[in-house]
Length: 126
Image (cartoon, rainbow, N blue to C red; front, top):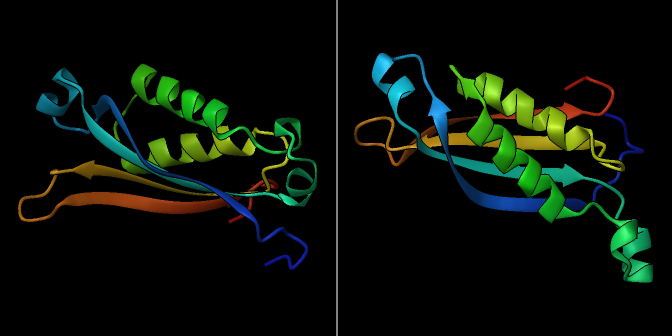
């Protein structure tokens, strides 16, 4: 891992979106809850000094892009959706790494949720 990457993070926790996800016919017919968590690694030192939104990653903008994508796409797997979301996050200026967790609450009997978690870096590794 590159030690020069910032250790600061912007976190979006438990973003609840409705969309089509799954491989079964019944999963393709109706939207279901999809829970998204992201942690964006970026350097927040300048924003901490200036107190200016222009010097940071706007988490509202990122959340809106994630919501629009989840609502507008119909992926079969959580893995593909997580990769899409990571790419959205990494397209934001200043984001060096994105950790993305995507879950389907209630998808497994006796489990609160099932999901995947991935981590990607801006250069495509991870």
